[in-house]
Length: 161
Image (cartoon, one colour):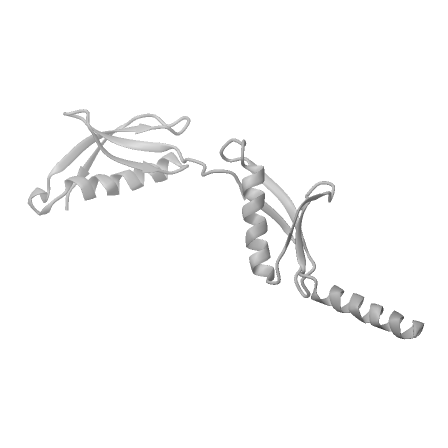
């Protein structure tokens, strides 16, 4: 009788272990300390929930552009952990503006890290804004204003085609 009870207890214990929901964990990237642990049968859903929770947790009071790094670990069979980096908030790119020479009103804006690329995008935006069918061959003059470091304001002219 005692042996049967041991077998029944062993079977119940092993079936409970098999039916346990697999977990995914967020570990500190530097020392491997446990930060957060979630359980879900699907590895992809577990990863999505873990990433969202880590973003809420790490970016709650952080400045825009701050990076949160953690390593993932899984109980799911066949899934390997990896180093994950999240960026808090959206980093705003510096802007450049086209200012009408005569009226001093802003014609268009573009955002880009590079001032040269921003000036190119700005010329396209000015053409979209000011060039119409009736302004074929017309010259549009504007002054550029940059937020990028080291970029100087210039006077530019665009010809409508």
